[in-house]
Length: 171
Picture 1 (tube, rainbow, N blue to C red):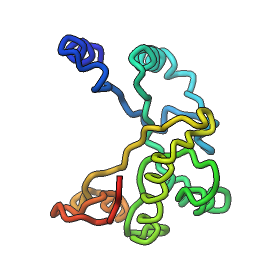
Picture 2: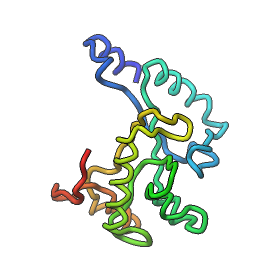
Picture 3: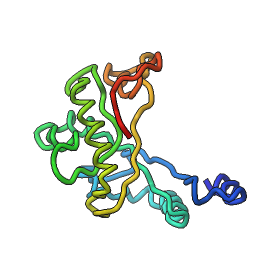
Picture 4: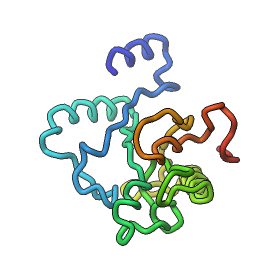
């Protein structure tokens, strides 16, 4: 990250291009709700320098937080309305499968993506940074029809494997 940042700075692109990274939720403790997350103690030594780098360069630390997995893992406590940004104060990002198992459907995925994009565009912020824009990403660009694992794992893309549009989303 530091080497890439040096190149970006050398070409005077540091105000237009941000270097960032995404972390996996296995590094986090207390993951629900996401705003209450902390890092496990054994990862602090390597995550702190990354956070400092990002802070110095005014770049976000992204997290692969999948509200779908939180929902299917504990639907009694993580409500569908919370997971798809249909209730106040959502603080998650990631993706939602369009088919393949419990909770995976085109209808729910469409609502999730529209609500996530709407929240990001609203500049409502997060619980920790209200009123400030948030940076988020959609996982993934394409369905992975050859991916091994549960059927839902093949259907997180916003496009089908043949590159045709899956949703009518406006950014």
